[in-house]
Amino acid sequence: MLEKLDQLAASLEGELYYDDVHRVLYATDASSYREKPLAVTIPKSKSDIQKIIRFAAENRTSVIPRAAGTSLAGQVVGPGVVMDITKYFNRILELNVQEKWAWVEPGVNLAELNQSLKQYGLQFGPETSTANRCRLGGMLGNNSCGLHSLVYGSVRDHILEVDTILSDGSEVTFKALDKIEFGEKCKGDEALLETKIYRQIRDRLNDESLRKNIEEVYPEKKVTRRNMGYAVDSLMNSEVFPGGKGRFNFAKLLAGSEGTLAFTRAMKINLVPLPPPVKAVIAAHFHTLEASLEANIVVLKHSPSAIELMDDIIIECTRDNIEQRKNRFWLEGNPGAVLVIELTGNTQEELELRAEKIIADLKQQKLGYHFPLVFGNDKIQRVWNLRTAGLGLLSNIPGDKRSVTVIEDTAVAPERLPAYVKDFKKVLEKYGLECVFYAHIATGELHLRPLLNLKEKADKEIYASIAQDVAALVKKHRGSLSGEHGDGRLRGAQIPFMFGEDIY
Image 1 (cartoon, one colour):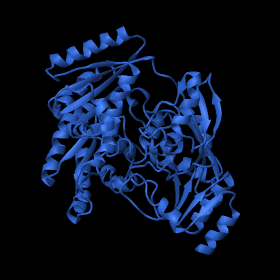
Image 2 (cartoon, one colour):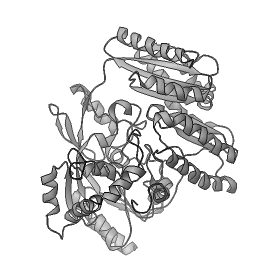
Image 3 (cartoon, one colour):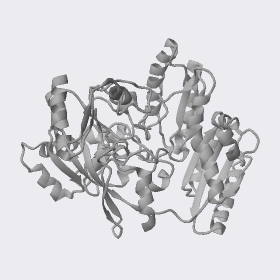
């Protein structure tokens, strides 16, 4: 194998490493997993990518596309050949301001992209908390969304075309097709992998019983964060299949596919206008977590741009942190939970009126006890800084117990959250666990992180069994086991259980 790797390295314009240092560096991501890859490659050209893919096919190993490695479910950890695209595939290739789209390479950084778009009054809508380091290719693979997904949705809503290289090294561009164009793709050269792919999806999704099964088993449509499995339901709902509307686009399937279906060489993305100039935040305080879940349903009727949850454990973590203490200026007492509700508009007066209506509605429902309204970009940023600091501060809890990511990505319809959390707390009681509740409550996603010591055998066993218990719970409530962080190694094994063997 070393001989073969040396031959591959000699044929590449880019770089290939198989020394222990590089293999250790690329053995982890932001998840709990660690596995050394066979080799690390840094391709410099399309030809390099094709050679690496062909090498993997000939030697029966895998190709692992990798960007910043911020994935939380082990998506870029494995025994195959890692392809790091951050060094050479990081250009903005084309920008059309009038039509609001851009062609970008997969290694483009999100924050840098949006900084360059700001002068045109545009941005790429989906965002992540890792914006200053994540890359667009990783965002496509993960179907990323973020804080303002109520407004902007996920990458799947904004991907227009994808230039790819398939597993046989062939180049294919996936884009929106009408019924006639789809038919032409299916009539193509039957020796081509592209033609086989179009025919396979045509034949499978024309099966009425399978379509009905997908409708019944996939997360209900109210669940907008749905990264579990492949998005075949989004293809099924196109005009190509009975009852569907709109054009067919395989690029939608690539969003959330975690680098398993094709290698992204470039992507055409939709751009949106920058948000309105004035922002405000209501930091609504609640005595209990349960009250905040009910309040979320009330606030959603008022069209906020974001609602985020912080529970008492996270709030307590900020108390003794020197950096975050200055961001606690808006806190009153010891709330069991806080909802950070963001409003955007054109004037402060407009937002004050909207805030009054939200607060009046919550008080009428007897939900909450303190509702500070925060204006000014600096103060608002300090509120958000406290919220986003929570994840990092959790790692500072004294002792060996840590908030682990085994079940932290579930999403259900917002109105189901109160019942779902009630059931979830019964699971915690079964294992005698504490748990952190925080994040994207507006879209029904809570990052639920139980405190476990993974140095202990008993807690490792809980890590595995609680995953199965929560999968059953999510299935009961017609949710998605992965709302935004993806399946990866962590949740991939649960897909047959969640969808059934036929869909799988």
